[in-house]
Image (cartoon, rainbow, N blue to C red; front, side, top):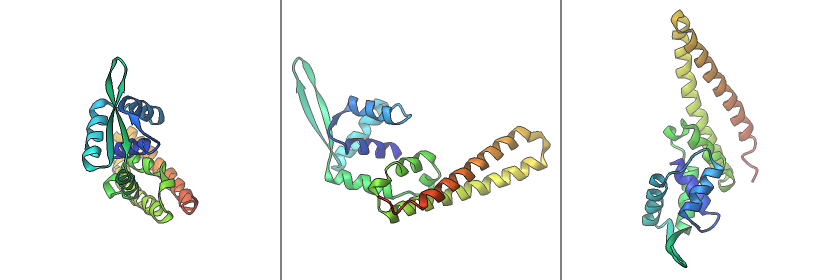
Length: 172
């Protein structure tokens, strides 16, 4: 789902052909978008009325397709940004993609995204605490205990960051 958000957010900047869209996504994310991901998504968006496709003719070359987001597509993008299910909230990419687009959300919507992630991190932290307890009882898992401690520390750091973000949700 976060790739759908990334694709639509790039289209929001203006009409673009598929290769250029793929290049822009790769430049702004650490993800190499492949044709078998991009074009089915664009087709889905086109069928839903979120994107239009026009053929641009070039002399001596086959036509290339240019994609443009529609008003319905802008609404869809907003809805995807504002909605963060518990499963998505547990996924770092889903969460960070939304935070990176917070300028498109209201303060209440931002707060709900941050709350959903906080809840998901709480579930993860509880799970890690159980793993740490088992690791402590079993001396054969020292390396596993180090991993669990690192992951718990990352959660604590992210929770502190979310707390700082929560103080900023009212800013445009």
